[in-house]
Amino acid sequence: MAIAQVSPYAWEDRHEVNTYVARLSAELAARGHRIVVAAPSRDEAAVRATRKAIRAGDILGPPGEVRVLAVGEALTTVSPARPGRGRPAVPIDVARTVEQLLTETPLDICHVHEPFAPSVASVALRHSRALNVGTFHAPAERVVATQVARKLVTLVFGRLDARHAAFGATRDLMTRFFAAPYEVIGPGTDAVVAGAGPADAGAPVRLLFVDVEERGALRTFLRALRRLDLALPWEARVISARGPSSSTPLRAELAARVHFAIDGEDEALAWADVLVAASAGTLTAPGLVLRATAAGAVPVVSRLPVYEGLAQDHGLLFEAGDVEVLAAQLTRLIDDPGLRERLCAAAPAPRAWSEVADDVLRSYEALLARRHDETGSPELWARLEGRRTIEVDLHMHTDHSHDCATPVEHLLATARDQGLGAIAVTDHNEVSGALEAAAKAAEFGVKIIVGEEVMTASQGEVIGLFLTERIPRGLTLEETVAEIKRQGGLVYVPHPFDRMHAVPDYEHLHKILDDVDLIEVYNPRVAIGSFNEEAQRFAAKYRIVRGAGSDSHVAAGLGSVRIRMRDFDGPQQFMESLRHADIVTKSGTLLYVQALKFLETRATPRAARRARRERRVRRATRKG
Image (cartoon, rainbow, N blue to C red; front, side, top):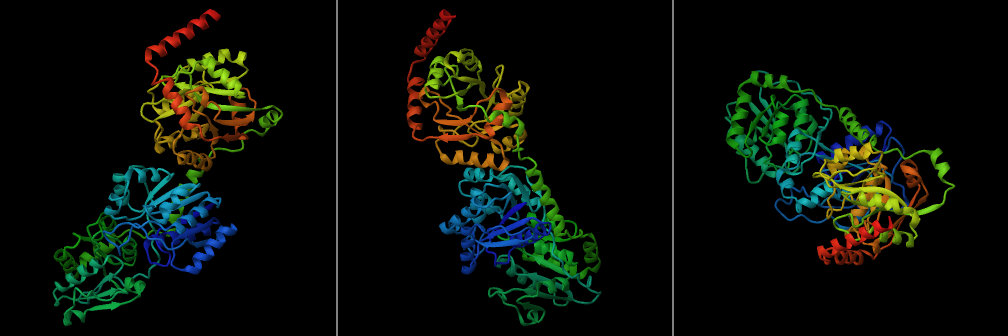
């Protein structure tokens, strides 16, 4: 597989998301996959090299190699250095680089991490043409809850084909704000030399704090130490590049027991009996807690959902910022060697990164398995190649639809005059117009595909092609699709991402994916072009046969999009011909045909429309 892993954090920075991306990428590459990592960077030379490689098309390395691409400096949504401040936008040059990378690189999977907006990961999700997987790690609730334009974020997240959560608490948080299925795939644990075990009776209990949380966490830890009885046997170590907290000075007798170091985290984890994680929720360090547990330390953590899940049954908790309770929990561990031993014995075995890669690969492979077979029938195509090329419009309405006033004869005459060789008549919740058109098709020289645009109970509209009888409205999407298949018809999804129409949401579309035969990738009545583009992306990544139709409610709109394909007989030949077809579009008709539709329907009194229909029926009866 060709896989992109996208992190929103500067690659030079120490961050647990970057660790996850790096370790997962290495495991996937070791299994022969082609991996590219895209992340922000402050290394200008690396950014220039990345942009040069994208222009040259030299992006994916050989199988087994991880290529790291620096897409430029970008500020991210989760920024502990800017608490409470407005979210800056991703720079234009960075967004353009990400767009070029993802639109010009043939990828199977685009795996975005923490794709909250604005960030490099959210930009990648917006432009990806691959199957999209998103991993949500340990975002603070305020980050999730305060996403600007929640409905828009929901639509962007709707492009995710699979969603992972690094922890059960993350799954619960994301489900509360952005409901969807989330598979929990937790991080692995880097190898740490195990400590010497619990301190001997009478020996100092070794307390550790690693300064990777917000600055207030260190202050909480130091204030708790000030409340410990100096008669108790303990000592503490703080790993911090920032040094002691100026707002929490240490007394001389306390300073003798608390040692600061700039680095040496691995050595400190092997040394420690107890790890304290005191985040108040702005930034958590779950990976640190996992590594400490693997090294034999007892975690004492603030009562945050992610920390609580990690320390369950083998750690102690305190309310975030509660110095007194933290000091009391530390005192319990110092006083009671048996408690430390019991908690250490209850700790789960560490999870290897190879296990993480196994789970992630299963998710990838499940998505790839849902791609449609592109090969079709070479034998059938060989028989169709000699046939004439015709132009086809697959979506239109007659006055048998409640919102259309075009008589069947007028539609057929217009189709003939427009040079269309075949049309699909797809009235709303009615098949009578299509059957009437099929009965009169010979005299106009236009082939008719009998169709119906069916409104489901609550999952939008779906079109059945090559039907024999009417399908009632109000069935579930699955029931409607089953009825189309029962009649030997084809399932055609119209304007699938046009939020101004009744459309199946992404979750429901995913459920019927295996039964979808074709998808409408161009509809000229879609007011926002990006909706058609999204349909194009969806059809491409799942390799679904593409269709298009004018969705005409007035005869003047007929043929505003055409499919050039070989002539066909029946649904099988139609599908094989459509696989090799070209879609031809033209612009500039939307306002005109919408105005005509209004004049022919809303602006015409109902009685006049009814009288016109009755006259048409009488004429048809006399001819009969």
